[in-house]
Length: 184
Image (cartoon, rainbow, N blue to C red; front, side, top):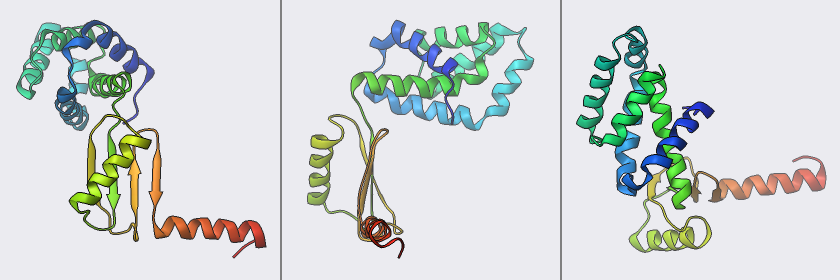
């Protein structure tokens, strides 16, 4: 999903007003709601047809947010503002922008670790130590097995990519041969 500058503007204003009401544990719920709304673009586009029925549209959106675990007045204010400005269809993008801005302000950087095999508990501790020392002081770490990653490990944050794998070594070797001998 591409996040527009308009979405960042709404997200920034929201965080300026209600930042104290957001916690790191709430980010997963916000992400879930954003993903669901992004999948239901047609429903949000339908809201444009009901522009004159602002109260009904707001009420439906409030109910949806409350059902998903975001019942606070702050979310109602955001919904009302987007409905008033006829921008409810961008709400998923605004939610994503809220998450990104919050994580950046808090120094949270979610990390995704891919490995060719299942890591042992000790290996996971070592990877976490490496991440905390070199890439991200705070943030969640998720693990995934990727069989295409031959004999290696890949760590990705929003800003960085670190890879140590057989494939990466082969790429470096190819680049060295190409530089030294004009091809391989």
